[in-house]
Every structure is written in C-alpha cells, then in structure tokens.
Image: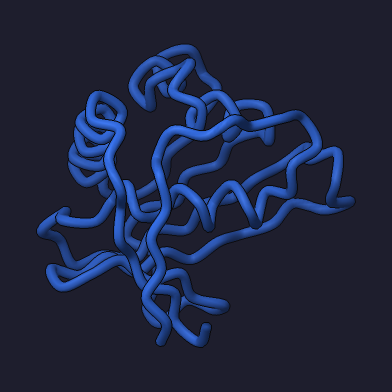
Length: 136
C-alpha cells in the first residue's frame, strides 16, 4: 500500500475522469472513526460509457479505495458525474445533493450523515490530506 497526499482545493474541469476525482478526494474521509464499506456509483460520465462503482473501505486507521468490495456495502450512494464534480469542488454539499435528489442512498443513513458532516468539515479547511490506496 502506498501513502499519498494532496491539497484538497484544486481546480476541477468537465471531462476529468471520475477515477481521478474519487482518487483525489478520498482523503477527505480520513479521521472518520468508522468501520464501513461504501459503494459509490457514478453514472452519466462523459468519459465512461457505463456506470462505475468505487468501493471505499473506511476504518479507524485509514480510508482505502478497493477494486472489489471486501464486505457487503454498508452504504450505497448513487450520483451523476456532474454531482460528483460539484461535491469535489465544494460547490454543493453532500446534504444539499441528497435533499435535492442528486444523490440516492441505500443502507446506513446515519453513516451517510456522518460522512456528509466530515465532507463539510474538510471543505472548510483546505489542508494537506493523507490517505492510503490499497494495491498502489
């Protein structure tokens, strides 16, 4: 496993691969004291013909992006590519996206609320984030 770091605030542009957006923003969940698997389904991407699922393992010791789920997803979030861009750029909060119907959730909604809070906190503090990508 390789350790990575990035600056949270960075320019995003239409057409950026969803893989890169997820990869660059997964560190925003670092420090979330949970044990869960989140499946993030991105649909309607202009750079991918089919929907793509990302499996994020959250543990008290780190956040890991997995190729395949290690356990059944605790939470499944489905969103469009455009919504992913807005969330990554902090132009829309996770709560706003859910309430406006841009994100659908299935599973542990309490976990979704804690994740939304963590994303909101990280948006307020543009600092260097650390995370680990499994298999990198």
